[in-house]
Structures are given as C-alpha cells and as structure tokens.
Image (cartoon, rainbow, N blue to C red; front, side):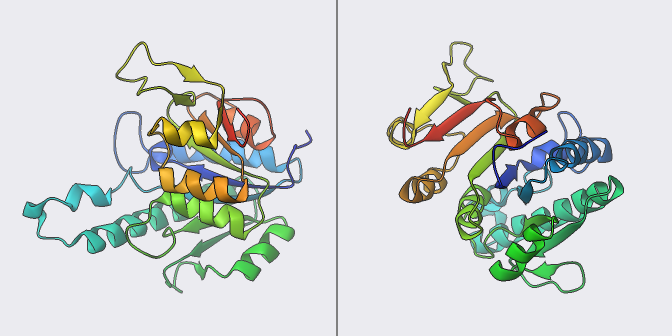
Length: 241
C-alpha cells in the first residue's frame, strides 16, 4: 500500500468507540478502529488523530438553565471525555504494534504529554501515531474546529472526518429518506447551504488556508484505511466542487 498523503489529520467521532446504539466505550469498537489505523500505518503514513467525546459526554447536555453548570465548565467536562477516549485508543493501537503518544491541550502529566507543536511534529517524523485530546484546551470550541486547527499547525495534507453517515448530504439522511448525497463540494457550497455534518467554523478555517476535507462513514469496514490512503470514499470538500 502507498498512501496519497505524507501526513493526515483524522478526526474520529467519539461514537466510533461506543457500543452499537449506546454510550460509553466498547473495547471491540475501539479495537476495530485501531485495526484499521494499524493497517493504514503500514504505508509509512504520518498520522495524527483527534477524538470527539460525545460517546461519554457532550457539553451541550448541561447548557440548559436548569443544569446549574456553567457552559464553560460543561465544555471542560467534554474535553476530559476526549482524554478518556484517547487513552483507550492508545492501548488498543499499541496492542497492534503501533508506537503512540497521547498529547493533551490541558496539562495532565500523569497520563499524557502536553501538546507542543514541535514535539508533535517530531513524534510524527519518528512514525508515531499522535492522539490529540482535550480539543484546543479552551471552551466554546468544537472538536471539529480543534481538528482543523491542528491539521493546519501540523502541516497535514488533508483533514479527514470519520462520522456515522456516508458523507455530506443536503439534510440528515437518518431522518430524511430524500436527502441528496454530495460526492464533492466547494467550501463555499458547504457554508452557503448551512450543512450541519461539520462545524462551520472548522470549514471556514480550512477554506482560509485551502485545507481539503474528506467526510466518510467509519462504520463501513475498511473505510478508515481507505480514506487515510487517499481513496475516493465519502465527500471531498475543497476549493473546487
């Protein structure tokens, strides 16, 4: 296998690590993701991962006035959920023979390294999979936007978003049987149609620096491997539709 890219930032939904239709962490799901990542790494690819935390906790669930939890606090709680996911995936990857580092935007020396751009670049150059957790370390920033930010900082060739549908649709395909699938979109088309599968702030940031984005379904066996190797799966969002 030969990858089309030298370096990739892969954003994986927290739901990819959960039991089917459930919440929490299911190790069979984690190992399935790790297997695909391990196979992709055989091409010599440099890979950074950003994980969501929605399988454990979403900050938005505490944002009602009745929750008594400040929205910023809820976002920090969500960041900690991504660290739990990162640690689970780290062990699964290392059981497959991958060398890894978990790096967090919030300092927690007992379990992970702090995210430092130059150190992260060095790990990638040494062939280590880096798992970037805790978002950007700031509240009111989604993990999608964190993935866009890190892809630019680390000079990735593409940002990949692994989600639970085939790619980008005109509406939610899980609710609308007539939703139209888009194999390719420009940044402007995505933003003007207010498509919801990815945070608009993340797409705006990628558009500013011409970072291509591919959105694909992690639930199809082999899709993670196919996407990181540059195969035409899901939807490509770029400067040209």
